[in-house]
Image: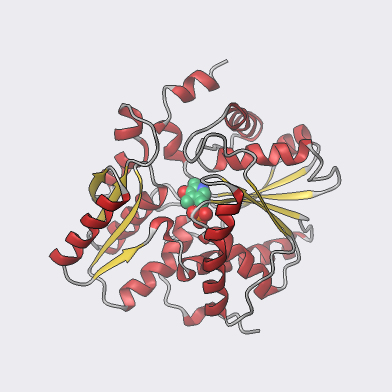
Length: 332
Ligand SMILES: *Cc1c(COP(=O)(O)O)cnc(C)c1O
């Protein structure tokens, strides 16, 4: 098989394998067997899916002689927080250029949650109003410093997606040990590096599984257009043909009014996971993905005899950025 990841530079940021957790009380409530892959758990920077991407992204950056890192995102970006954390660990200065792209304000959103941790991990934070202003600041940083590695939003490039190719190999090993294989995988889709890695990994390793991608930041068709070029790029790195989307469905059924804007179903899903399994979701990614899981069960897209794997991508600090709204919805 062509798929040997050892030729790509990589630095270890997480502890792998991440846990694969049985969820008896949640499964009971949903009438489906649910397993949760706990990619939200980690020692570095509170953990999350971006650590897998950053292992390869920063591996490549260091190989190329980077002495400073700049990346981008919304004010409450988890990717920015984990980039700051990884850079602290590596002794690299880190600039975060954050755009006020989510229509939210208030003390919690603008100063707590992820952005508070960005400061804890010693990053230099630049908050701007538009993507154009973000690019201007980016150019200023490139002009002011030598050897800057620029990592795009969400760390979603072919190289970043290799982190989720590695995650597929890890899952195949875990399911090989348990002997119980899920029929469906439910995972979030935003900047798409996670999904690209999952799809490319499934193709590369011959894992036959239906994949439900939950578009949490834009409508399904646009989400697909973001995914496809990154998927092609990932496949090219692995030297495999671009994977078909035959076993993939993209749904935006829980997107609501848009990115970072939760609906009532999302708060209900957060309560469900929290009260049955003490698994903590947040309203931007994992809560929307869980709400879609519930909906897919309700309309029998996930049938009564199926075993479903839910990828928990992290984002815990974002929960605290949504007070007081979160408290209002979660306190009965
Ligand atoms: C970034 C992120 C996602 C989405 O992953 P993409 O690779 O951007 O599609 C999901 N969950 C959390 C918590 C994230 O931070």
